[in-house]
Image (cartoon, rainbow, N blue to C red; front, top):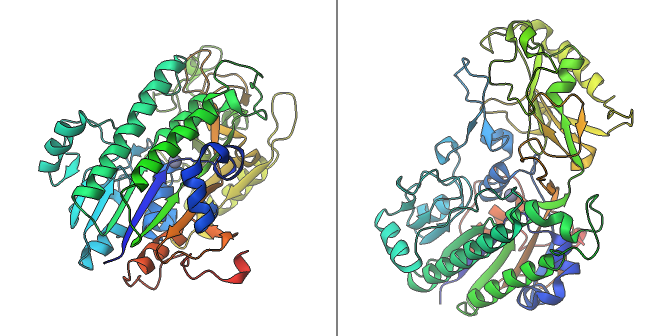
Length: 477
Ligand SMILES: [Zn+2]
């Protein structure tokens, strides 16, 4: 029988929870670990969903892909400061399903981030959570949309408002999404019989952002005995039941891989990067936009920034991206290109002295894209900044009156984003052709593409990052 490969993607699934804390409620996953190999999977920098999954399935780094976050500034469009949500049209590199289609294999790519709009493959593709609207094409071939809707109801792309406070509604919705995605996956695996299938469920990510403080004792808002505390164990058990049901339809010719794009960790608050830049003279607002007149969480893209006097600004998210306002590059740039390097070095030096309102230093990691990546395509930020090893996210909005806040600037009052992403996701490899090595150290997200191509006996382009996890070497332990 021909070999088949099934990749189960669990966005944000935490290795610490799967391998250790909740392993007792995950018998199916645990069995795969015992019969194969597993370990931490170091994410891309940044460990953000859209670049991370795309790095995983392309073997290219975020700079090579030109993907630095969910939203990116468009190259060759210097009239815009504001970034836009990425789409599959931005992906210039081939991904696993493209190479395998080219090699004559049949493939299925379901819900993998950054696959909207859908692209042709030798098989089936369903677009991801970034599908804006179900009236737009969301599957390939188009007839597949009707087939799925008839069997499984309207396609659940995502859980809306997962940072809101109505937790029971969120929990119910994300279980429905997981169930539908696994049901679709099983249907496609059994009925379309692809040689290679990969699907990604976003529910673990949404679950963590909504519930992390309920079950992580290290979280500043954790309260022992809170009414949602049991949900961590329950949800991971629910994931495992779905994995178990899907595994019923695989045979000994199948290799199974479970992967996550990054992990999760307690979020302690947000660094208001543009407040800080303004207070340090890098960003200027118009006179009428001075505090305390500025409404809470005012976007810098709503006309408050005086670009003609601004030297640098930042975009928020799980980390901060900072650009200098360069003459000739930005629409109202004022930093001379000849001064760019010096100004960036000065800004970097100042950022390393970041303190919160009480004067407590916040450790900062600052990456320069041209050093971090093999190429810098698209519109790379000038600096990529991580706060206290991701204990803090970056708030890009103004109107907070301080540099560090305890909440998230996107949530409503009293609502919190409970977690940030963490550097390590996970991988588990089991079944036909998988080494039985137990726990293995040192894997990186870039290793997945080569691993799948080796399993599928398809040659990988020789300039891909990473190395195959099938041919494990002793130094990995
Ligand atoms: Zn993710």
